[in-house]
Amino acid sequence: MPEDNDFSFDIFDIDGDGKLDAAETQLLHDHLEEGEENFAAGRRTVTYGRSIARKIKAAEEPEVPEHVSRREYEDKKLEFVKDCVIGAVILLIAGAIGGTVVYVFVSSLDFGSAVSSALILGAVAVVGAIFAALLYGTVSALADVRSTLKKYEKAYKRSLSRKKKADKDQEK
Image 1 (cartoon, helix red, strand yellow):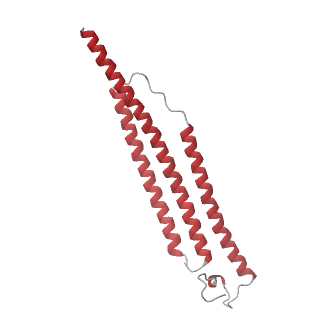
Image 2 (cartoon, helix red, strand yellow; image 1 turned 90 degrees about the vertical axis):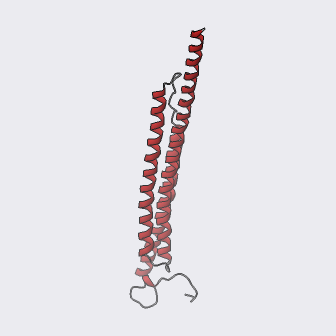
Image 3 (tube, helix red, strand yellow; image 1 turned 45 degrees about the vertical axis):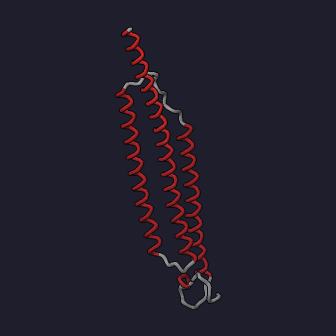
């Protein structure tokens, strides 16, 4: 191997003879395959997250009644705030878990070897994909709830204007 090579295969040279024999080479291949599997799992997770987001968007929007009382409108606003808080908590927990997993992988592996680089990339890809799927799904769900809230707000304002108009007509 050239001297200026950034990668070190010394950790797989179990017998210390400076060469990789068949068993050591197989160990190297096993670790590389594991890294590739982690990377593929990350891509599958992103695809799964996208399909979940598409299903959320494709779901029927709830029907907004023609007349909405102030109480119904306030309940929808409270529901939106609850959903925002729950989404933020989920993202914080996922970020903390993901950060811990990546930190453990990064701190426990040797940066000089190709295998550890592949494993780190695989771990980062998996954690990143899971976090991205959660973020995308949460933001999509909150956008749907917000659009429903806007519809309730419009219906509430229509109800108020109709009530004012009815009161004016009754006074005449």
